[in-house]
Image (cartoon, rainbow, N blue to C red):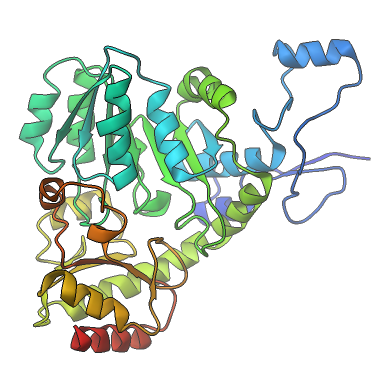
Length: 399
């Protein structure tokens, strides 16, 4: 029977790529992407097996190294990001860890923004120093601190923008220029923005990582991650690390993420519109000390947000007067919005970062990142905006 290779064209728009990008059909000519549930592959001869393993005739050889369904997801993500290549991983944290661990060795130096997700902070603060890697944190908003930290040779820079959960931004172009002058490769965790709102490679970043668990799946179904960069980095530096350490993405999860990409643009557009309107509606509420959202006129980095991002994103962070007690009363009054530490879901979610996602940080680290006891992170879903506003108002009354 005939094999069907889908005609993917680079000139197609992003919405088209999210539906058709990377598809490789089997001889059965299926409409939906096939799920290749196999751990291994067979060969017609011993010579064919040898050629596969010495890479003189590249092909799939083992599930830990590659899989057709996973490859479709990787190719589609590379098309969306404008990257030369991509590798998928079992989770977002596997992507963050692999992206930097494959680069560094004892004696190297890593500089990171202090506003990192809790597990990312753990990698830089706890794991890398055990390997003999020097690490330094800077306030990601302060170019003076970046300039000082990058005044000596550096192997890698890790940052996220917008940051989780306080939505602080990093000037990508300026930091990438400083990093490259220091000899560093820049790794950007772009999970809050997605490739549709911000493309770090266009500002000079070298590597982009995602927790595909968030907006890319978008419906709370599975874990997944992806790393994007040059073909040289992906194939020569990252792939051997992934091949031998095994943070492989399941074919089933890859298929779910492919389905998630098909509706990402539609979901994200609606969620961003509603998130911005909710942020504006909540401004000035007497129970709130601050409302954090990148495109609000009073957001400290609003001009940078307008330069780097197409929209403010799906996350609104609010800081309640009354600290932890008020925050817990707010959360416990919720009836529609769910208490969950996930984000980017079609269902609206809320969490208290100081006691959940960032609980292991010291009080000093929390203060440096703007994570107060009153801070709540709201991930805006696809519900009716009037219902969400009514829910938030009644919860604020209870707080």
